Image (cartoon, rainbow, N blue to C red):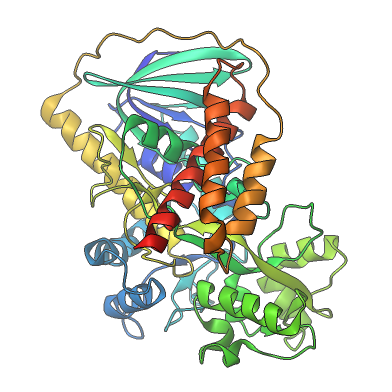
Amino acid sequence: MDKRFDVIIIGTGVAGLYAALNFPDDVSVLLVSKRELTLSNSSLAQGGVACVLDTVHDNYKLHITDTLIAGKYKNRLNAVEKLVKEGPSDVLRVSKLGVDFDREPDGSLCKTLEAGHSRHRIVHHKDSTGKAIVDGLIEAVRQRGNVTVLENALLYSVHKVYGGFYLSILQDGKSLYFGCSFCVLCTGGIGRVYQYTTNSAIATGDGIAFAYMLGAKIAHLSRVQFHPTAFAAEKDRERFLISEAVRGEGAVLLNCHGERFAHNYDKRGELAPRDVVSNAVAREALRTGSESFYLDITHKPADFVRQRFPLIYGRCLEEGVDITKDRIPVYPCQHYLMGGIDTDLRARTSIDGLYAAGECAHTGVHGANRLASNSLLEALVYSRTAAEDITLRLRQHGRKPLGLEPAHRPITGKPMPEGCRSRIRAIMQDAYFVLPKPEKYNESYREVESIIRLLFSENYAISSDLIEAKSIAVVASIILDEVRELEND
């Protein structure tokens, strides 16, 4: 395998895969997957991709307005405009690559409604859109001769040098070293910073932590989205999402008494933006003294429900819940990150040659709260933008020689301390959930900082556990420090 590439992409969700596909054949690309290619937050995305394809009943201005309302007008307007105006062509291109979106009898793409949207504009593949897109992009990537794929490979250090970067990667217990002119971080979210999340097991904020340690600007990391309707499994279980689209198709939210309540907190009821509905659930839990909540779609025809939501139907059935007959137990859960590695409209970070796209990036598109189904669209638009910008720079300036390769530390060492990740997750779940507890910020921050000092104080053996623990600790520290400052302003 070559040791030097024009571009190294870390992460293989929609952003990483689509970025790789947008480089011309003469640009060498290394695509690094932390686990198998199919494991990513993107693969878990159920609802769909929001885009304006029907300009008779919809338009860009409406999509932009819906995004700004959901984001509490804290969005970067130029970033939203770019997303909404360029997104439809990327969705159509993905469709041409073989992604099997649901279609109407006339062949046009089906469009559904989701919370916060004023029009039916979400294209989808049943209730497993993310998986359909990822699977289609993986197949396309495997056909590309200029893209080398490295699976089950964990990035554990990044060094900035003249002309680019050197990356150290752990695979099968061995260190691999690569150089590149440009690096694109597409490492996804931070779900594993919390005890309960809809995210995949690999969502530990690695890219954000590495960018931060390189000195990149990190923006609004405390803008964490809690989805109101995660399946309320047992406390020690990972939770799966009950898509926004279920409410979009008419499901109602009920409290422990079987009463609808969302309209008591916001006139948009169940179709208010996610943060509004999550807040309503949390406040209703305090009012009733119960965390028992349900989503009810039993009034819809059983065949429609099974056909429209086969994944959710099957997963709930595994938990003993037949959603055509039974109410679905739900409760808010960590779901998405609106902040991240700060980028401009070209997906550039504050570090020359370092780019970011997807959930790990802060483009400013989402503001204080993400509008449903804008995430996959953002991943497509800004990863393609990163590839275009890098290609232009390679064309204009060529490949620069890399500076001296740094010395590499041994991966052996003493075992890391136990319990660090569990403690951080408990801290974050308690101090900074749907209804935050500002009185706990300072104490929580100090405790996380002590864990960071412990993790970085010794040359522990390099392992996935250590790297993820460090990432989780750094991310938690940034979040808690940010909310402390906001509280004191």
